[in-house]
Length: 252
Ligand code: NAD
Figure 1 (spheres, rainbow, N blue to C red):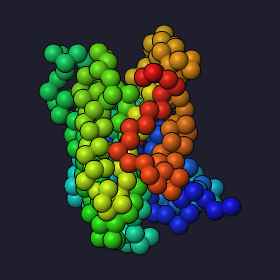
Figure 2: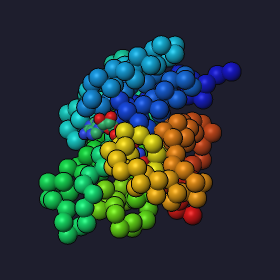
Figure 3: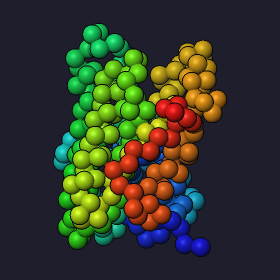
């Protein structure tokens, strides 16, 4: 049976770790050629190795999503290596400081907004330009968060950046629907990744986080990857501008 992304070319930012790595593996398993982009070259190389060992196709490109030249080069790499771009998973992000708004250091505010929001915008910008050059069509998925859809007190700059990603997704979906470029977002709840290990290093806090999800646990990166795969596949050919919570019922 053909894979759900057979013959497609995809970029994944933040592909060196967590949700990005799991999605890169899922894309490759379903027949896509994957360009893994990250600031972390070691982790990115490991993801490529995991894909290659499983019989899939992938390459790594070092890319800081806050730098327009890097993002442009990532898309150019996809085109020069594989000929085109069909799917972009704009996922790289950081957790930011755990600070109330009045205590948030200005440099942390700037860094969080620049990586999480400007980074997604730059990735969308160059992906759309390439998709338009190819005559239109394509699927873009951005990573927002439950923190982007609700005003949780603990979220701060991170929540603001993820709300920006949600809104960016809706605007882009409207702007490029006429050219058949679908733009959606996933909004994960708490997911076991290196990011949550950093945030929830206190086991008691982690236990509270697990219980806050009605399904009684946090999610796994593979469970988010399946949602991204679905949004990039032709199964969702009539879905655009959607913010898909993958959150064990958290927002419900
Ligand atoms: P992670 O820390 O495991 O992975 C994030 C990846 O992004 C890392 O490989 C890191 O090197 C990369 N990255 C960071 N800054 C970058 C930059 N400037 N340019 C390129 N790459 C950069 O975290 P994760 O949990 O897999 O997070 C992935 C995305 O999911 C993030 O956007 C995060 O905000 C979002 N998210 C995570 C959770 C969760 O509970 N883990 C929940 C909601 C949303």
